[in-house]
Image (tube, rainbow, N blue to C red):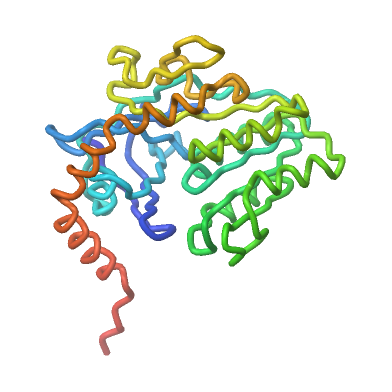
Length: 293
């Protein structure tokens, strides 16, 4: 069992967990992930390690409640346990002093891009962070990004905060302004990562994406996470999760990610009422109680 030390919502349906996992905290590197199982009969889900504290023996993950398991996970509180936390898994990010490095996060992908931005800064890069969200309420880790980046640009689809537009538009503005950009990392929804790849391709800018296929065991045995990169089959869990964006077959990746879409909807529907009720009850307990005199 792995105890939750701290749990807090940082945006609607997005929760940050600090979990006691000393061995993982000691060994993890930027770009790696863990696979969680909430109970003995639960499904296994991959979650990127957003941060760690080796001295405290903790890791931090950020979870968006989308499906049955992530919604259930987001009802847990400090003091409760997660049955399994396996990791660190995957290859660490390749970090070097590229020069000027841009880290792009779309939605909860910002949580995945954050630890890599930290490592890029520590390697001596001039770091630029671009974080995109649908609206102001969904902007993640702005303060944390400011602490590890030389420049931070927030974009929102509706213009309610920061730059009105998409992350690719801001990236294109930076490139067209004459800035020399040596490296781009993009993590988020598949269409966003594909759009970033097409934005940088004409300029020959080295671009890396972290893929998010269906994953079960995380050790390369099940084959569920296979993707096509440079016209070759790769297993994302052991060969990645990061790959050259200009070589990824994004169209096939999107199709494979929809394989179990109907089953996921059925599973979520069967439990949605119960989980939403628990989630709402939990949120109500987080509201500040009036002082008793």
